[in-house]
Image (cartoon, rainbow, N blue to C red; front, side, top):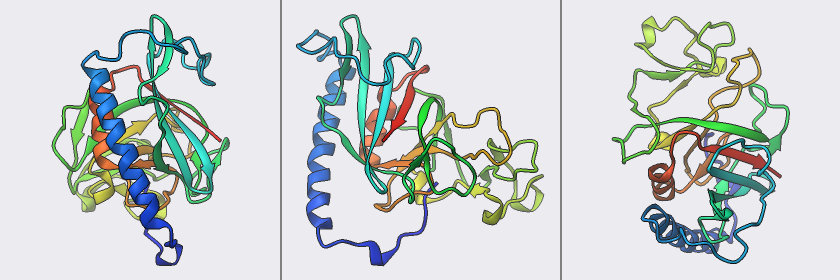
Length: 243
């Protein structure tokens, strides 16, 4: 979930960070494309390295690992399990990411403004833009697509399609419901947080396109990089989030 930008948070080093981010993104795109074509399939030194999430993702072979670096900043690493073990698809170069305005928390709940720590599935993708070739199921959304955040609703924490006037749940932002037709959701991947749909335990956690600012609990990265990752992802992929 994105939040409105705050001009007073613009730092003097922003231009430098943006330039650094562009370089990282370019390298990531090249590496991911190479991986998709099989160019990185050969084992290499350090291939048997066991990342922190290795014993927590079951049989998953693709993992997006998000590590907080302070405040609302984080880095995202793309990992793949091969016959030789886990290896970083991005060559150890983390993708700059934004997380919750108040950082991370193991105890996620509605309105916390924190990104939930833990291991979660990546269930499906969506976006206001046409399907870019996502390896996960993709839903193109418009003005009638919502993420139900109404804790009293039987469809809490799910995507719903309805006219605003006829939706069977509270569509106000104060209720936690989001209309998905916004720029930050040009492309997004749904994180399987609170799949039990326990009222108050939070919903609408995505990996989505960044607007440069902190989020209300999602993970946000450069849109072009996100599209490349979406093309690489397959059913069964997971996301691992830690500080």
